[in-house]
Amino acid sequence: MNILLLPTVRRVIARRQSLRRLCTRLSLTTVLIVFPALAAAQSSSPFDSGLASLQNLFTGTIAKVASLIAIVIGGYQFAHGEPGAKKTLAGVAAGTGIAVMAVNILNWLWGI
Image (spheres, rainbow, N blue to C red):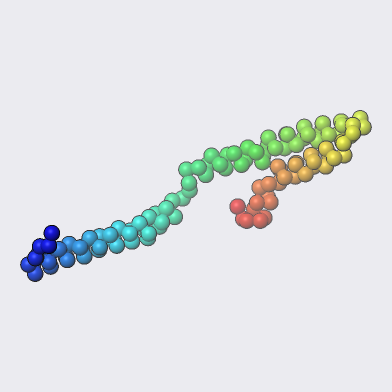
């Protein structure tokens, strides 16, 4: 359908379209600039405390106690001449180092 519009009606339609474009640009600007600034302004994520607790759990006292138990069992195996005891003790030493010193290694590598 081809309708001839009066010049004033055309201007009104053009203004509405330009106003829509302006609103779209403003909302896009708000999303791209204001929201990331608000997100960066938050002090911490809601998961930070829970994840920090898990980190302390697995690299703290429990890791040291589990390492001590593994060293004792590996020592008994070595003392009684079990086959593969040296390999087991080497694995225990590596695992203990990783579990207990993981926080220090992450701090050294990435400053976490």
